Image (cartoon, rainbow, N blue to C red; front, side, top):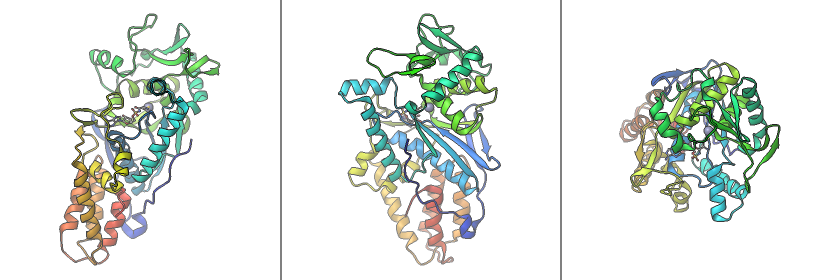
Length: 408
Ligand code: 5CA
Ligand code: ZN
């Protein structure tokens, strides 16, 4: 499907600042910081929205984290190949469509368009491939067939399940023990108690048609894809067997990223992602912000209320991507104040060293995308009234746009 407009991302190398440092990111599977510095091309897959209530501050924060990663990679001189899905057919979307009397296709299209508009306003670099699950039915069928050939898929009634233990490394993405897996699986779409399953954790890869629900005629029968295989099949098709980073919010570590990695690994025999990178959960009013709970702060509502998207971006970047944090309505004023101070500072005729600023911003972001530190670096530059460098204000505006995605 259509992606969204590409923001202007200036090149610091073209401004004479050379290449940025290599990125390190925290990999959930090894629980450690890892360099992510491929030779030429970085391949990124980030789990996209289920389009029935776009875009809350939690979504926005998660996509900003991976936007920073892209910016650090680009600044390093790497070519980035990026795929993101839209879960445009799934239980929660169909339930919402039924409850509100809106056609599920229309609901998905409307919310996906809102998400595109929000991402554009936030200056988030779009994926090269933005793919709906309904566009990827053939890819899913193909992967399920490969897994069938490997003996890793079995039938329960007319549904097809993936045998998670066919991947000897199953469990290594989340590192969860059996007890924790059993606790989390049913909370995130799993059906451990269904009779006929080989193992309670096995996951659905193909769901036979249910009355009144959308279905496609395929070699697997009439039905629709399971959730996890949507992401593994797209990542493999558009990015290759082994990718650099699989990203998303920390609510996806298990089962989603565990299952999609195992599916891909059984099919290819290769490790699916070099690093599994997860953004923390954003809360509101004491709980994780989520569509199912309805405690949402929508980006579009803040925009409609006249808030500058760059101020919203800054209020999100004030939190490190890996921390869990809570949105307070007062957060926006922090972003607005900072934006005004920075805009004023880049309007000066001279400032402290632009080269040092570029180096410090680069260092902060290359160190596990430490945006709060980068904001502090720029705050310090903006409040320092030294006039040693006449080109610094222009450099600062370019660097902040290139690395932090904030247009001053
Ligand atoms: N369509 C699936 C992924 S394949 C999905 O989880 N959709 S979603 O709309 O629920 O979430 C979209 C993205 O936002 C996911 O990466 C998810 O991990 C992230 N996310 C959801 N809620 C929050 C939150 N409260 N804070 C931070 N990130 C969140
Ligand atoms: Zn996904």
